[in-house]
Image (tube, rainbow, N blue to C red; front, top):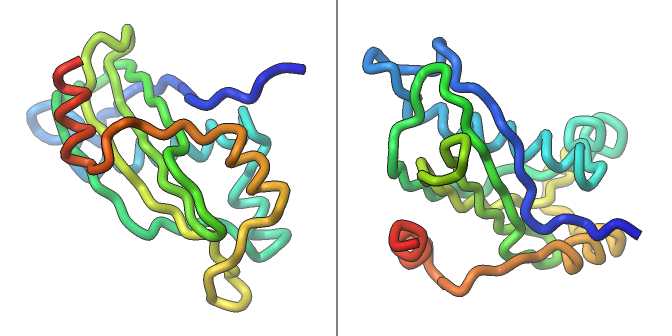
Length: 159
């Protein structure tokens, strides 16, 4: 049996329309790149398609909050690596860390912590995770030593 990965990773290229006049990624676009990467990674590695879920089951996850630190610019037409991992979960929410690196992962460009809330779109209320999801989350959860976002940013900047 193949082990389910805990750290998911994908590459993407920074595009012109997402950059500012200085040829680096606009601050708001970091969120889009990282969230899009996470969505693609969930499909590829865990067979979770949040859009199909929403369409067929009326359930999905919505962003509850984001914290982001911009450490180095991502440049126009640069290939970046985006990693994500599940830090914590409970009956109805997920805490995910997302990191953006240069192509060889020698420079951390940004880090983001996101809280996702499982949501019933039909009833417009928070939804409990199924037993199947709880088992998956237990198998892929990969917490970090730091308990706050600020501590985590400092630890990554030092490494």
